[in-house]
Length: 363
Image 1 (cartoon, rainbow, N blue to C red):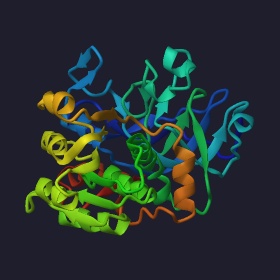
Image 2: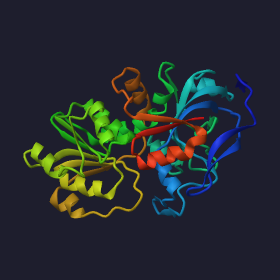
Image 3: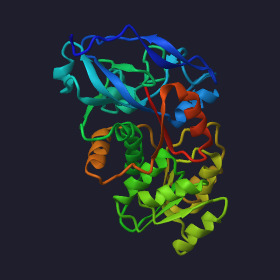
């Protein structure tokens, strides 16, 4: 192992012990083994799934139903960027990284052995190890983090700021959702929900030059951010009949593409009524409860293409390049940065969303 600094034995870390039971504790620092990379975390973002875990929402995964969202105790956090401080044997050759480089790891650590991994569909890995929710896979809300040998690691350009570096993961997720939508020239596209992911989807959809790009949200500051990210129209469903407004834009037909990123059952129902026949409905959100809708709309009434979207496969290099070249500027997204000991305030700010969009922690 080649080490540029002497790693301490312990570090401060935000540890999940259960719903509403997150604690700042001293946690052991894991030196890198063969093929592993250790980074000093520069920024760690708070995600909607972190909120779901913190609030104690149940996890539904196939036939599995766990009362808790995480295997506790575990270090939270899967949106991050770090500086390489140690490389395990062979890790430099494998990743192309050197001590001092900025680096990230994709949020999922594939097993590389299940049917999905063998087919290149690693983001749907049956084992589904994701940082921040497993005891044995510590997340990024800590001073240091070690990427396992199975992880997918990317070098981050040195001129990309840490706050932007920690946006790579959510932007990659946004890009994947927009890719799933297969936007065409002339399409009217609606993005429902203008949090971090929705704003990334607005920016990505703008690159496809749709005829009209509509953003929906209940918060005025998020609608303003959506306009800065490339939306043509920003509407508040609490103030405007958004279904009627979109139909008026489209000669009564409805939008061609509806991307659901609000994470609320009403947003799903709204989209099914807003979208035209033969339209494309993309669902990305982390829902806090089961959603019930009239499936007749999907089949017998409109024959919709309903597409799920999960994580950001093959999109990390694209996200990095789009931000590096300025084709996507995430400045409106990152609204707050707090020291790690204010993690509870960060979670509360993300939960209320009164004046925040993306809140990041600085370990």
